[in-house]
Amino acid sequence: MANNYKQRRKKRYDKDDFRQRPGYNKKFNLLKNAPVCPLCQKPVRDLYSAITHQSSNEPAHFDCILKMLRKINELTSNEKICYLGNGSFGIIQFRNAAGKLNFFIRKRLNYEETDPVPEWRKKLF
Image 1 (cartoon, rainbow, N blue to C red):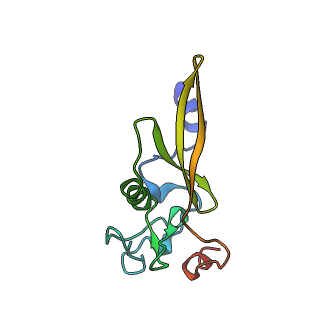
Image 2 (tube, one colour):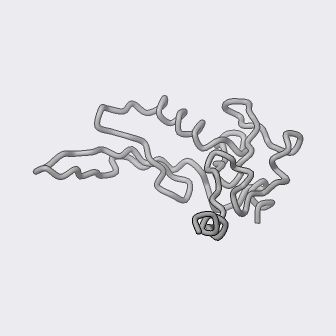
């Protein structure tokens, strides 16, 4: 009976193997088609999480943009940079008041302009 249960279970995807994810776009997995990140010079294979670099208008890794913003902005020990959505980041400041951990957005960083959709992003739709 235990073997029958294992056969009926749904297939679980390995979170480290991005090729198994549903909706993965295989045409950008090839190195010859993948655009190069302007910050780290490595191919950007997951274009769904890429962000447009400000100066070159090319796709860049989300983590590369986040590292660059951390270097530019001086953060204290109780601050972090977080993605707020729609191409903007924010410097979040945490405060511990009366046993509760509160936070507020100290500064908003509008990084990516979303009004003219970049050409590389139009290919994804």
